[in-house]
Figure 1 (tube, rainbow, N blue to C red):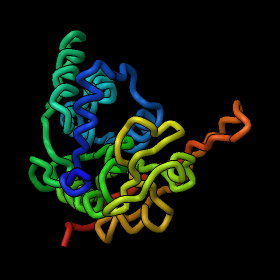
Figure 2 (spheres, helix red, strand yellow):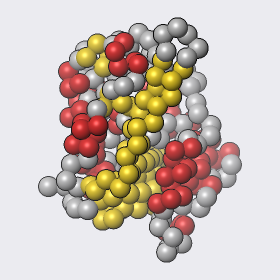
Figure 3 (cartoon, one colour):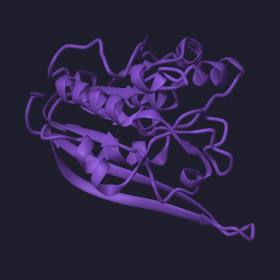
Figure 4 (cartoon, rainbow, N blue to C red):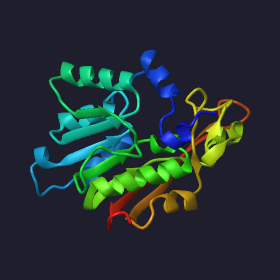
Length: 233
């Protein structure tokens, strides 16, 4: 086993992105979160939004296109290069860095919103908690966090091996095959991961059941919106 559950970076993502994997358009859940929670009393250019695990820049493209100050941190250097090229082609810009979710390279109280669209769930539970502590540090008081881990009701959870720090590895079926390690959260685990630094504003479990095959497949994820109420202890 690699130590990626500790480092919050699974090397498989560099392989995936270097082989051409890319997402072009923003996720609807991210678009909805931003439009519902972004500050409206200041100019858009003065609103700073961070995506943790920004991939090839699909969500950053949306943020920059709408005029907000977009920031991204991503573990894959290949993904960051693709994202920068993607935005440049449309005359857009975002501050994107290669880095570790558990040690964010930003000042305290810097961001208005932070987005996690299925990225922290790729870390072990301890690493995920550390990453969320960092999210709390860089968010302004009252700033909103979109936390989007996979649920333990996901069919892929039962199709892998549980390793150190709760990571599910060697997943053999479902939509999570071929993406390395994943942590699947129960409701209490998802709530506890947010610690005392956050107040939960809304928590949803979103599930889609694919009945194409005899063995029904369930895609299950948490969509949690939380506001920062205190600095990490």
